Length: 173
Image (cartoon, rainbow, N blue to C red; front, side, top):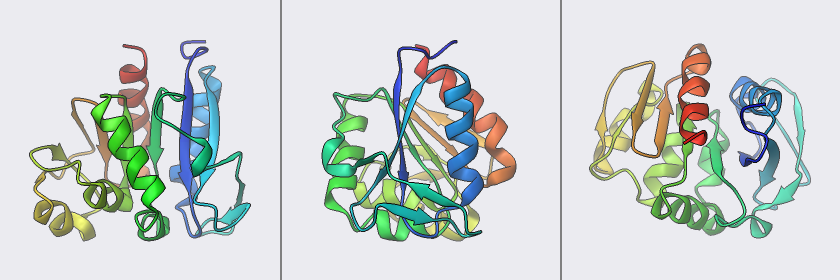
């Protein structure tokens, strides 16, 4: 159990990308981490793009960067809603200031851009939001997974194995 002392928050909102939530959740739990699904407060349960429900363990107001060791921001269409939550953006900023691991995949980069944490950073994402990240000051690369300090970013579900391998390595430091 390589992560038995770690607590990780996974952000969810309606229309999250199912694999980009559940693959990390199960991989982190398998490694021994305590994983919480964290919602914005708009619902007690959210439905993924493919219909899989995600019941919230904690609302964003109960999650502080001092309580968790890492944060996962999945893609799908959920990030467009997540980035409208000031509490979500504040958590991302706090995690980044504390240099705690943040894993962000696909359209999740919208949350990083809205939180203002990508300027001068090297990241990847789903190609459709490449310009958004570049306009937010990021150096965008078309790679399976990019690690820049405490940030781990990936493009799409096919990248999940490498993405989680890198995130777990950061959590073990």
